[in-house]
Image (cartoon, rainbow over all chains, first blue to last red):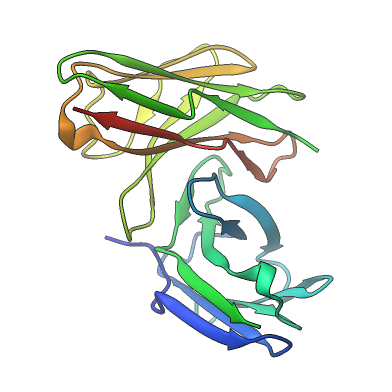
Length: 112
Length: 116
C-alpha cells in the first residue's frame, strides 16, 4: 500500500507563474519530509525538506508547506522557470530516520 | 557538497549472468545506504536498506537471494543481480544517508540494466 501519494502525475505551468505540487501521506508517524527533483536517466537530487515541527520552509524560489492534520504537503515554485521541468518526488521518513518512502512523482513542465 | 557515485551507469548482460553495481559515497562516510528500483511511470521502489557491517534489510517482495547487497565499508555498497532475467531490466538507484540524524539522502546517478 502506497504510504506516500502524489495524485497528479503531471502538471503544466506557464513560465513565471507558480507551480504547486501536492503530496499526501497516510502514516502519522512520519515526521520528516523531503522533495526531490529528477531528470530523465539521472538520480534524484535533493531540493528541500521540512520537519514535522514546522509548517513551512522556504529556500529561494522553493517553499514547502506541511499540514499535519490533513497529512498533506505541497511544494510551491515561484516563479517557475523552464529549467524546473522535471519529475518531482516527495518522500517521507519515520522516527528512525533510516527508511524513506517515495510518492509516485509529478512531472512538471514549465512552458516558456 | 556530498556526492554519491554509481558505476556502471549502463550495463547490458545476457540472461542468466550476474551483474554488480557499485555505489560509493565520495566525500563522506555513509553508514546507511539504500537501493531503489524505478519502473516506468512508477515511483522509486525501495528495495533494501544497507547498513555497513551488517546484513541488508529487504523490503517485502524483494528476493534477497536474487539481489545481493553488500556494504563492506563506510563508502561502498554493492548490489549484485544474480542470474539476471529480462524482467530484471530496470533503472537501479542507490542513495546514501547524510551524517545528520535526519540527514538528507544523496543519490547516485543511477544504473540502467538491460538483460537480453
